Image (cartoon, rainbow, N blue to C red):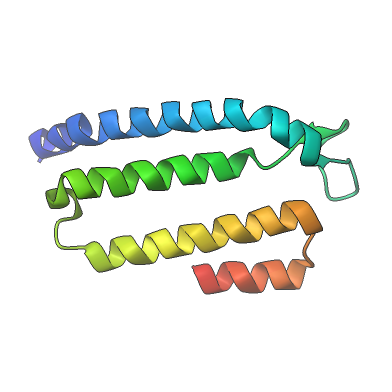
Length: 121
């Protein structure tokens, strides 16, 4: 059992590192654009005290999904016959990311945001 878990870590660990570095690169690449077009202004809902770029989460989601799909394409055995669940998790992740991005840009009402998040989950 432990050996199997360690073996999985040797497979998943490098995949996670690729996703991390791709996320980091995308965030650094997008940061100037986000600073120009996606500044959050502190308000009652915000934890920020000064204007802060927002939207970096989309880079993390895109990088993670790209790496997950790439890993699944290169090694279909990683899915272990759970392709349908992988598609469902991908769709839910994408929906949550879109809801978060829209909320960042337009400040969705709490009820609408919660409804969309419930649909995703």
